[in-house]
Image (cartoon, rainbow, N blue to C red; front, side, top):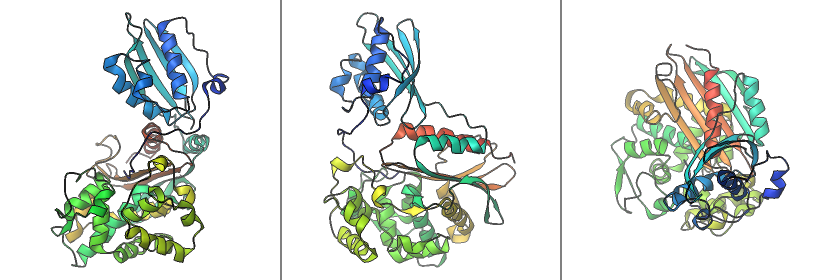
Length: 431
């Protein structure tokens, strides 16, 4: 996934008293009831979750774990209590989230200290029994969204179901599929080899690297490995190194060749270094980008390219897409690029098929879905998913979901959205 560095900070949210009006009452006549109410109050507080506050809730050996789990939940506030069940020294909370989903929290208190000594969180999938349910669930989420399920027939996308499929929304890391396509085109043309190497630079390293953080500027990475990590690990550094290797114009050509509906809207194609600098770096340039014409934006990209990226922790959890700082495409574009990657994956470009399927990104029955190619993305406020999956009959399908909010949503929302996607896959007629 795309990522920028994060720092806890105060953001506005509903207070516990405001939420209580719509919540099931929690009885505080028992230690587990007291702790359940404390959990809800902390999650609905404007104050971020930290270990100091969690020390008043959990036993010493559970503080770090509980703090981490609650921090992920805190970003999805405000919560209302949908249900609570009490057991011997335990409580099971069902919380409704700000986006219409649910989180289940199970806690147990120590009989001697009344501190929490067991804490777990699970995210139930929303009920998806029809295509209409997909829209109903996503409508309640408050997100701008687009989704599409397409059967691939003779290399063409034939839509089975979808909504807002021509709406151009943030792609987040799905944009990296265009970089891979550019690499494949260069290899087919004989201008590049999978065994060629890219060289680590300080600027590219500043974007963060989940796969190559141990490398130093000047170290070299084979193109094949960089491409694999760009897709499987969504490695930011590898992405910019590959863009530099093939050249920006090659990626812009890939947009057109793979059928993007408006290649000019992403020309010149922003590198991660450039877009991170404008969206989450110092100085704050978001409004200038939003208000700028094409010439202004081109100049801003050049200036960002020449500037060392320094992240601004005060904006690390604030979406930049409301200012237009993102890579954009539609569900129709996603289907076309996913299909184009499979089409080009022959001869010298054959490794593209394996690169796309290194990590399937979803837990499906592999007897029903023997091949799964995947690319997803995550930037503050924007969560995106896409798959090229072949069923047991040999029929390919492309499934995608794009969501965009004006507020940050983290891994708990991502888990809930995966429940939506699994529901979509379950509605595809069996092969």
